[in-house]
Image (cartoon, rainbow, N blue to C red; front, top):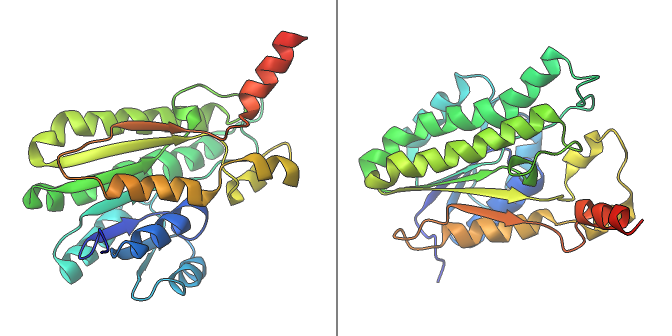
Length: 250
């Protein structure tokens, strides 16, 4: 039996990577998925594998976009059961020596502001239902400051972790649960914007988008009485740990 039959799930950043994989995983459990992202053609490619999926293209860093999508969901379905806050990006020039104000704004807009805007937009629906699940893709850099990720991305993802915990503090009395997932390196298109190129051999050892999607599926299928507050997930071959081990041995 499909465990999410009849549920409505909104997935942001659904055009590729973890978002696309999460949409497929939740749809496989019977959820009706609403896909959003900046590029409609990418969403259409994902939707081709998910019969009945709804598309809501738009830039979630724009504060007007999330309320408009939430209103469209409310009008069409009358409810929203799951929000997967997955939109995000990083910039190439990310170290303090190169980071610009425009670059920082781009990172904060996609990774932090978009997440806040979506939560603010859906909370009234979920409060009225006395039920709802929020799942946020943060990062290992949201728990441990990372030179690799850069200060803007690390700061944004730390803020997403704090946002999720604050949601549980305030909204648990309304039946709303919030889970923040902090993945280590995942072999997704965001790697293409790394200052130092990542080899195919290194990518093969990383987490796959489907690994994170399986975790999102697990969280989504938990009973409403259970809140999984925070999860760290990394590849077994953790390049940060391996590098530290090599330095220590040297």
